[in-house]
Image (cartoon, rainbow, N blue to C red; front, side, top):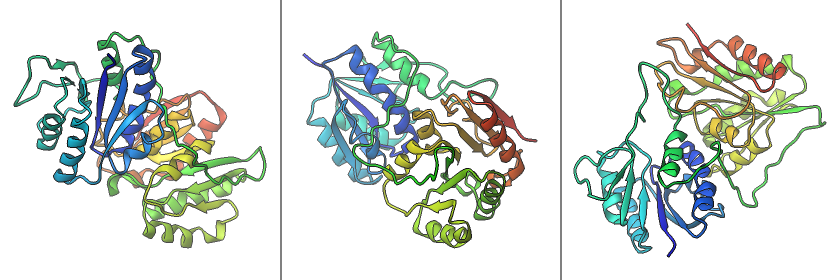
Length: 338
């Protein structure tokens, strides 16, 4: 009888979902007859909807506890043999609700359940948190460990985004031109590019690299409007994407990019999925520079000085990293600014 496996992705995080996509093919390679389901959110469902290895998709329409309960009840009806939760937030009542409601025969967890451990829980203990004294493990180490726990022998972990039939409109006048996709927004203001910083960076690239065309991703209607007004005079080489309430068009643009510039967020991991050169900027308090390191062959990580936001990183530092990236493919660098 085939194993029915439920993957929890109900936190609705797009970056985490991109990492999760690398799990499906090695899982099916190990158990060809297994059937995979995902319990996800409305935003990160785009990463699973067109994946050929995902049979069931249980979408929670919001972060509301009742929406998650309803999605969990639908998952329960499948009668899963195992449920896998890659997070370390088992003390969260919402996570406990989902696990209890799904009622799979066995739970695969990365911490012991804090209130109701079960005798047949498979607890994959390890140093999964962010290290304050050394190099932390990459987030995908958990996914590899899960595969090894099942007896699989996967190769290097690779993200596997499937977008269905969606295509992006790409405008590059000649094959010698490069398309740079810039994502300016992250989960908080101190992790994002401010509009003045973005304007300064775009201008610097526009002047120094006439063969680079820039496409700016819009995270909101207000941002789209502001960027149109700001870069109208540079519209020959700077375009702004229309805002849409789904991540699919942005992912499609990244798929067609020659290089990507972004703060620490989903765009960095999307670039890694297609092995695009990427420059990723981090605020200094983040402990995830190791855990969320790009997997691309060519990248630069730039970490802001202590006490400063991403937008306080001098544009000249990013331009230096860009020059290095263009001159030396297959190079990886991390710059800790002081």
